[in-house]
Image (tube, rainbow, N blue to C red; front, top):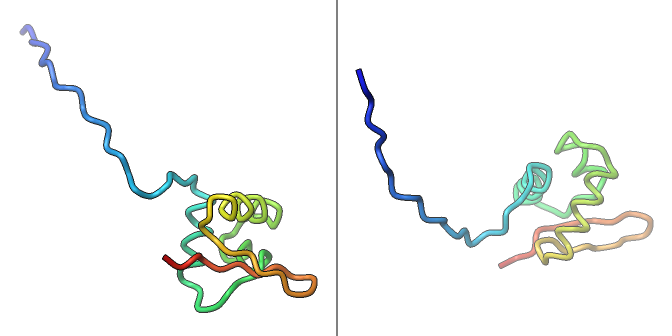
Length: 84
């Protein structure tokens, strides 16, 4: 039995309005959305089940993109999601 090759139209690329996020950034962002108050870097790392340095790096990247707000308080840094 000979199979014919079916030519398919190439799929169009769909543009997404939201920035693409890697899994760590997405997890951190979801934790900040669920939180009722600002969270420290340590707390975000614990909730996301990642290490503190990883959480810090991704939060700084998110701050540069304008997704979160950094609020220093003494020797702690609190983070919250930027409101629309």
